[in-house]
Image (tube, rainbow, N blue to C red; front, side, top):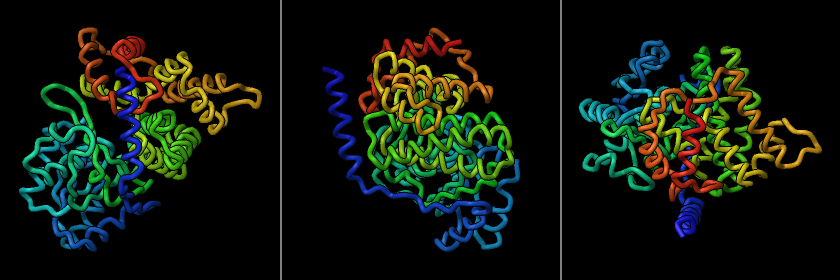
Length: 401
């Protein structure tokens, strides 16, 4: 009876999602496209903007030329760079306070998924100052336009530059959850591959596998449409063709550009079709142990896909993905193709030094993580298999080192 309710809920949500007035960001891409951003901010007649980033980027010099351009145009930039790797409510509240104190008129998110998520939630708090972040968790609880919002991703993975989601961690409980609303879709996305040149190998690997997880979960779930399926398949192909090249040669500008395209397409797919049980589990590892989200997804995904395969679900979809990434033989059946696709994920992980297990998981924490994962996934995520608490526990035990 519970599963029937979940599926009915997902069916209704899918019908609603296909009828929503989706906005796509204005995308500016290519080498040196960052130089367009200051002109766009000036054209919007903004005189003061909040720039949300992290300490590493702030010290790296990536921001310097952009900030100089803003200064020459008479635009004041106020930097908030105290974002944690898994951004917290406190981070977002502090950024929102800076926005209000400095009379900012727009937000620039500059960095990976953490600064982008923090910037989104900060903008939400600016828009709705009398409503707590926890009250806006879940879907369509913002329902109010945000200030002009510009996103400059410096990694290729999260797809946050095109999604309606922002993930935040509750400082007090270590619970990680999402806010989802059409208003969280950025107005402008700058995809400049030069910003990802020299990205550390580990970050390249983890964020790239994050993009692959988005594509796979969006494709094998029941929330997809012809448009999201197309984007998910193209994203998966781009990841398999380019991620290792990006990892192995940080200066490969074509591979870097293609990975940005993969992240964007995967983000487009999952923001409309949702993710699944892999993400529900990954978010708990980020909340409890600060495990980087991409790393958690990379480790968890093959275990969950194997679990599905043993139950005889998602076989056809995984087989299609195997064909798309060109790892099958003409006489392979769907079951064999699906098996090869899961093996290919494990091999891609191994080639980049991503471990097969997550260390540090405490037995005492598993029941609490199960509760959080179950609460996130159900009834919303249109997954191939609805996980009960016992299913989640099996996966936690599998990934535990």
